[in-house]
Length: 197
Image 1 (cartoon, rainbow, N blue to C red):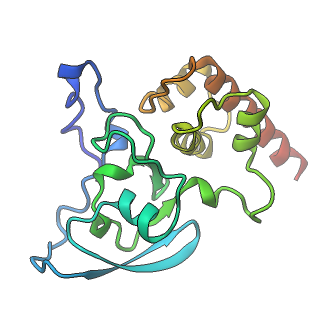
Image 2: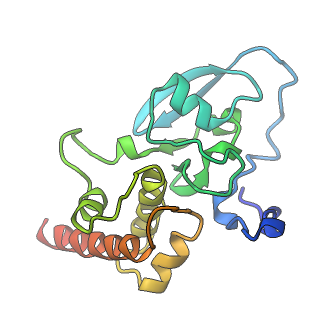
């Protein structure tokens, strides 16, 4: 369940959090009062994974520290920059705001899972290289995951739709025109691949 609760959470600092990045779990699911470890089973990049977590463990911490998925960057740790963006059941969310317990029986996708065979880059990754979009690379994984979510739903987005899809990701190194160009190029490459398949 996605919520509008925090839409203007960062209003006082001049930044609002797009609601599509916020996930508050299933409010109908009973919460454990056990402060010990609990088992969570979820699919990570197509592989069924089981980990033991504390009730307060964040998904971002579990992905990085326990599963070694380092593309998931922890920068602001308060849901304002988008560096930790991953896909949760296909939707872009800030993993620094999600309790690992809320991911039980869900699907999590990170940048590491984009390559189908582990050797060839996904068209979105290729387009980011072609357009020279990545600068320091810290925000790039989150931006690519936001782009993937968009292109999975809309294979022919407009420039404005790309801007909206990337609006929850902050880059401090470059202007966003390169990212927009990269996503539009990736969309074209993916349409061509689909047509030739």
